[in-house]
Amino acid sequence: MFRGIWSCGAFGAAIIFGALLSASSGAFAASDDFMRIGGLSSQPIGHYEFCKRLPQECSVRSKDTSPLSLTQEIWQRIVAVNASVNERIKPLTDKEIYGKEEYWAYPVLFGDCEDYVLEKRRELAQTGIRISDLLITVVRKRDGEGHAVLTVRTDRGDFVLDNLTDEVKNWQETNYTYLKRQAANYSGRWVSIEAPSNLLVGSVK
Image 1 (cartoon, rainbow, N blue to C red):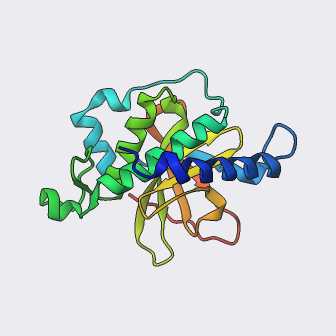
Image 2 (cartoon, helix red, strand yellow):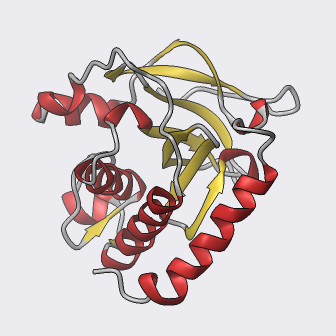
Image 3 (tube, one colour):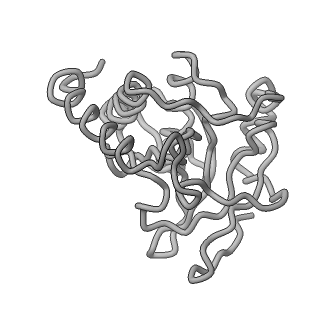
């Protein structure tokens, strides 16, 4: 259900995509448009337990880790899925839904940040985007609270899908401190994200 997306929404997405092309130098985006990945990092406990329940979700290995070639059609698809899931799923905490502090699951009617991420990842994968380009990402908000977003790896940069906004942004345009994300070559492994030197990066156990 993409109410309002394919009318003015698709037009707006096309304008933004055109701006992305204009901002790129030649066929490539600036290097800062891509997250800088460090070494292996700890797996969030919620993802670990999710993997125990659904091991097939965390055993995807990818030999080809080249980023997604971003076209206008794919961009519109990304924007539409982000807005659609944000509209359909209503925010509630894991404690309110499951009676647990941390429980990652595909949402039906309600979910918290990582549940939105899982659903967007699933729906975009169903359209043909590779799992290696759809990475669950852990960040810290400006108030210090942990948060999860979906990173889409493209040849135009790393873009973030967030349940707190329908706007799909390059990772540098957000106000988050980026901590870690799934490895592109193995969905059950996590790697650190090297933040700019002016940001203090912690870790989420």
